[in-house]
Structures are given as C-alpha cells and as structure tokens.
Length: 235
Image (cartoon, rainbow, N blue to C red):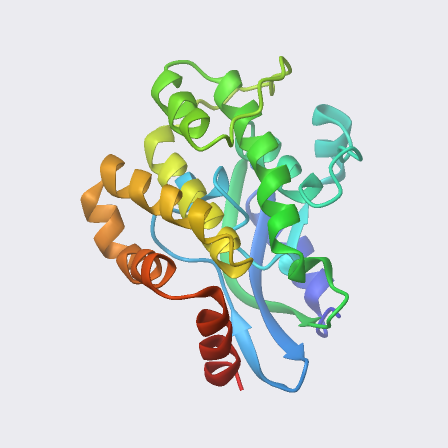
C-alpha cells in the first residue's frame, strides 16, 4: 500500500535527479501477528549489493517507464527472480538513488512469495551467473559458484554500459544471501559449504557478517533443534 503523497514525492525526486533510472525509499512491514517494522536499504557497499540481491524494500522502489523500452520487460521465465533480474539490468546501465522517504506498507502473509526462500536462491543463482558471464575478469567468481554447484552455464548475457567496480564484493554478498536462504530451509550441508567458502575467500567479511554463528549451528545442531529455537525466538 502506498502512503499519502508517495507518487507526488517520487515524481519530484525524478525531476530533481534527472539522470537516475531508479529510486528507492523505506517501507513498513506488517501482518502475521508481528509488530510493525520499518525497513530500509543499508548505507554501506550499496553499489555492490545492487548486483548481489535486492537490498531495499521493493514496494518502495520506482523506475522510469523508458527503462523497459531500453532494456526490456520482466523475464517471465523467472517466477522468483524476475525482479532481481530487472534490478541487475538497471544497475548495469543506470544511476540509482537512495532516499529515506517512507513510501509504502507491505503485508506479510503465509502465501507470500517472500516466504519461498529456496526458490529465490535457485533463480537468483541463474541471474548472478548471467551477470558473471556479462563482465570481464570473473573467472575466479565463476569457479567459486561452480564449487558450490550454483553456477548456471547458459550462454546469454546482460547488456552492460556501467562496469561494476568491485564484483568480488558483490560475490561475497551474493553468497551471504544464498547462505541465509539455505540455512532458513535447513539445508545444512549446503549452508556449511557456502559458509566455508566465504571464510576462504574473505575472513574479515566472514567475521563482520557473523557467519561463524550460522556455520556452528549448522555443523553441530540437528535441524529439529534449530527449528525449535527459531519457533521460540520468533514468537
């Protein structure tokens, strides 16, 4: 649900920043008997994160119609990853603006696609693999995904007019997102594999993102125990 004056504010921002293709603000989550919570995009490494996952609340994001004319419509072959695919295409070709405006409220419910984490993980791997095929000097990143059986070996590529500055950092954030999806699904063997690779690639990132906690739980606790702890802490 859009909040009052959202579209007027969005129009004003696009006019003030006429070089951007997309802008995003904050959103309030509600529903499923949980307290309302306002979410926003992080302020660090945002350019790298645009290519790794969707780092902002999607209901509070807006893009120009001309973008669809230039880079194409949604990829309907992706049921769970079509929005991430579109974001990657935008980030590779347009400027993006972050704002602290509160634009929307988003209802959580049991049938929401947002609750289907493993399906997202699999389709986002397809998109990120395509990204790596589209830019130079990504052989090491491709090998990292191949080790985890997360690399999709199709031949299609994205059009790129803005070369990413730090694809290695995008890879780490992408793997971290995959880690959380597989951990949430209690696919603990895959979780351990991803956590171990992240540690091998960047020990400081491993420490900063507190991945050791997930690795330890996945390595030493039975899935039923992890699920019991979740049910207790999320009430």
